[in-house]
Amino acid sequence: MKTWVDLQTDSFLDANARQRAIGLVDEGSFTELAGPMDRLQSPHLPLLGEAVEFDDGIVTGVGLIAKRAVFIASQEGRFIGGAVGEVHGAKMVATLKLALDSYEKMKKDNPSLPDNRGPVAVISFETGGVRLHESNAGLLAHAEVVDQIQKCRGKVPVIAVIGSKVGCFGGMGFVAAQTDVSIMSPFGRLGLTGPEVIEQEMGKDEFDSSDRSLVYRTTGGKHKYILGDANYLVEDSIGSFRQKLSEVLSLSQDEINAHRRIGSLRLVENQLNKVRLSITLKPKDSKDVWKYAGNDNPESLVDLSTSDFLSVARRLKFMAANEEV
Amino acid sequence: METLLGQGRAAIDLIIDKDTFVENEVGTLKIEDPDFGPGAVIGTAKLNGETVTVIANDAMVCNPNFPVVYAGIIGMEEAYKMAKAVYHTIEADRGKDTLRPIVLIVDTPGNGPGKQEEIFGMNNATGSYQLALAEARLLGHPIVAIVVGRAISGAFLCHGLQADHILSLGPQFGTMIHVMPISSVARITKLDQEFLENLAKSNPVFAAGPQFFEALGGVEELIDDINSIGQVVTKHVSEVRKLKKDGQPTGPWARGILGFERGGRVMRKKVMEVMNQEFASVADKYLSA
Image 1: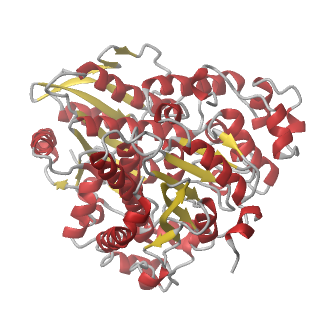
Image 2: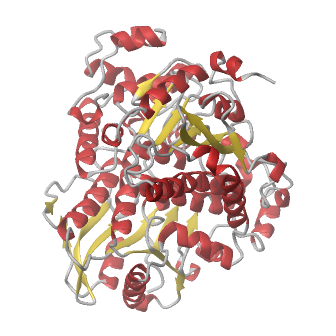
Image 3: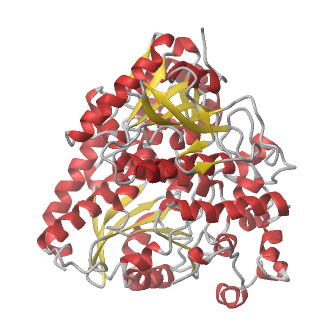
């Protein structure tokens, strides 16, 4: 059993969902809710002759960062690719709802609660979206997560952390975009349609999913950072993610809001700048966008360490909305 | 009329008051570029005499700038166009006592699955539209979705599943609601197709069809008389208004409750109860700030 101190220097990419949940909050502060002992497993998988997990592939619970309650949902890619079924989805919905209910309670008890002392919610994404074995229930759960995220806005900061093997795709790609703040490592991947699916639907000419470098350039953390979809890019260690998380948690609600990528008419107009750029630039590769953003030698960014990348990379800018606070 | 599949514009005419649809205008919004997100049809109309925002799909057009976007697919432009229609609906009624309804007419096979879409963030586009709908719903606009053709996976998630109430023409009209057809599920999960098809009759969680979504609480009502759809949408607008006025739940959360009542999703409730109970026993340690 790894200690919390070990976890801080461990690779986030290699860590399992429980290690991420434990390591992202202060030492010894994590309490798992609806853990494996409760055996809340999928009732649908056994009917298909498939194995179950007692946590249904998601670790949910609550911890503290600097005495502030942090509600966490951490997806496990080793179990059916972190896919969302009925139980898995309900655990994520309940995590967000507990954070919001806790906020309402604290606010009622203390109307002058400072806006950076209330609960926060963190989702550590590792998923391809809906679990096909129980797809209808999984889809409906996604809609409930979106509903909770909107309900949390302006009250409970919701933060996405993305740096695990499976990436964050399918319906959960929408959800990650809808959070207040997103933190990625260069190994994190974020999108809607995964590389294999694009290749299958549109052909190898459109997208060669076996080209790992292409895959990372298109949906990986560095590209998402340049594009503004990732607010922050951090090294691949649990401690680096935790450090960034604690910095974000010291911000006021207004400062958190300034991190949003979508969620208002103004931000829609900003995103439409990118759509227009897509039409005029017609990039063959993400590197064309990096160059447009002011990186004269985009190829050189591919293999840079995270810290070197951060010191030289220029980000796509149309207006102030995506600027770091 | 046997089906409205692929005929989003005909569906608009069938639902709203005769000759009242003004396309590309919502509040102060006027969309003048005919090539901007042509697969998304937005505008303002009257429904039973009341001003409503209409958002639908047009399966007959292609987006000239995005080759993967055709046949009702929601691409980046389409999703942002739909989101703008919602935000302008909110702005048009801000501060008013009665908020106009939004009617979503659903016939979409998916989101744009291309490289441009991934490079620039298809997820942001459809994510925007969902958040806009959720915001409008929580502000009090009644939102009623009606599935007239295809309501597939992520495209249904953005265009439909954030509504207060969801209606669907019955399966006899060729409507389809699913994430993936059983043949594809069989291929990806490596399970036998015939076995899955048999199981689908008793277990609606992975079966394809509006009747299965109804059993899961994912669709409030199936419609069997195609000529009544305007009246049924109007009825649900009134019901949603009343529910909201009475503080009763609508939308995704209410469909979770409905899924339990209809016996289609029974674990969801248990999971939430366990998490609430377990947190209550440790809450003092975490909420002392």
